[in-house]
Amino acid sequence: MIEVVSIKFKNKGKCYFFSPNGLQIRSGDRVIVETSKGLEIADCCRGNHMVEETAVVQPLRGVVRLATTDDLRVAEINKKREKEAFGICEKKIAEHGLDMKLVDVECNFEGNKTTFFFTSNGRVDFRELVKDLAGIFRNRIELRQIGVRDETKMLGGIGICGRPYCCSQFLEDFQPVSTKMAKVQSLSLNPAKISGACGRLMCCLRYEQGAYEDLVKKVPKQGAFVETIDGYGTAVQVNLLRQTVKVKLDSDTDDSLHLYKANELCAVPGGRPRDGEEPPHVLHYVPEEPEEEELPSADSWEIPTLVVPEIKEEPHPAEGGAREGKSRRSRRRRGGEKKSGEKKSPAPEKSESKAAEAKKPAQGKKATVKPVKLTGKTEKSAVPKSGEGAEKKEKRSARPNRRRRPHAKAKGGAAE
Image 1 (cartoon, rainbow, N blue to C red):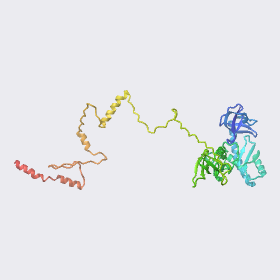
Image 2: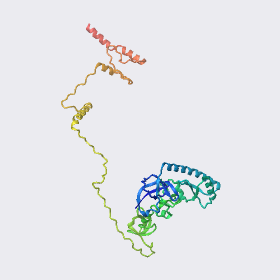
Image 3: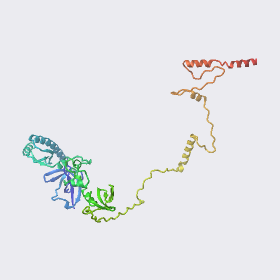
Image 4: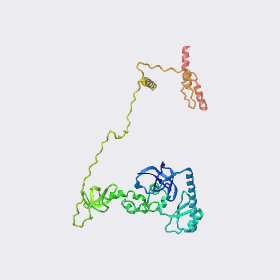
């Protein structure tokens, strides 16, 4: 075992092992490392850890130091120089009329070399371009042609899955991908659906290829002549993930399909026999044992009840008297039960002042008028009224009761 740290350049692509040289480096720290091109600034993606010696490529280079404030300032200056160099190089490419697409510019940490990355469909004669760039930047110039996959790795982006490109995150190298993998996984062969942003087949097609190859060995191919537990037939549809096959039996007169599991059928070697020949018996069916349902143990989580039972709280002995008094008062207010042996006290009569106040109309409310009974004497309504209708009603009420006059005179005559 050997102690190393994992380093990424520009925080993209492959991780490289470097010797920590006695330094304690944490993940996310920026460090100065020694490379074949000289000193470079890089990011630590994993701190001090132990690996097998066989996993390390010798000679193992070491970390020079942790990045200081001056180192970070130099890195920012190099970033500005890269942007300026990118614009100048694009102008020079247009002047020379070269068929090339500039992808990225990289200035090394020491500032004595500038690398230009470009893509092109064929070979490009860029000798004159190099002379112009060397006269402008006064350092070593290198032009490197890369492929479309490397271009996507440098630029980065978001894939159709919604995540950053695998090549710019963790892929160390590009492995070959073929359309056969898409066929085995029952994917659409439409190039627009199985191709990435680089225009090549997506790298993720290779991730599950091993699992699909194991599943293909357990079920027959589509269109194969198979023997099932119900007889011979033809495999019409195969579902690799569920390990099921739809079969059209030869004994069926209609076009009905039967669904079988992988252990309930087997492909007949050599395919369908000739007319008159009896197909060989190759199926050795072993029924699957039914899975026993595990009883829930005492430690397992139980399904929560949807209805919460009512919890009756018993009053504290010290608080019992106070709560009882409150409940009795509330019952009295509601007109509930009375105490045993208690008599209901008569309601106090209202005073005349309170009655007069009750008769006055409340502010903002309509006044209610009680009907007034007329006697022998003339009376007026308790509430003053205005208007012609009100005056007529006052005159009518002021008239004497003529029906009672004779009666009053008769009484007076009898008395005389």
